[in-house]
Length: 233
View (cartoon, rainbow, N blue to C red):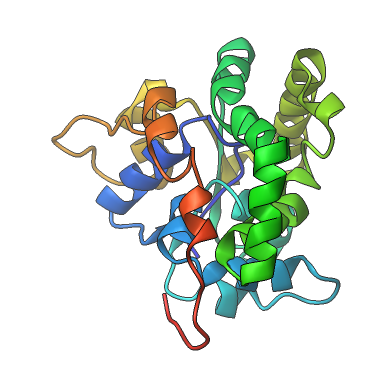
């Protein structure tokens, strides 16, 4: 593992994933990988259980990781991979909150609605992936960040966002850490990683409008998906 991303969702994590892979620092794990390979859901559920996590096995084949679920375990990962560099993606808090309200918080409201709860119950009865995915998010991400509706209230959410950034900055030595706004493009990222700047625009992906059209925004296809034992990534 060469790069560990610690930033919350909606801070440009998918753009960073794309950039790292174009720099040769991939594959880079991101929540999109869980949607692409739903067999990972149960591996992350197991990682959330008490006990030691075999990070090398869980993240085998990946050279970097950003976004959830890995960002929820940034402290453990930074300790397990002491030579890895750490990137904290950040953004104006008010713009971050507005994006969260249109995307991840909206997704959570759909899951908590009566139709959403019915879909999760049906998935549980059918043994499909949606219920397992919701449990994974509950145990790996929301349990560590936005565990309750009160935590998703605007003032509290911004407070948690800022406290998280402060905690990362306090914990990670300055020479190992880049606090990065993807709006700044290749320059600071390539300088930090000591690699040449590519002759192409910095990737800009997963705007809020993209999110709502994607599997990230509407995970209900997982209601129909049943991961078979022995499936591989």
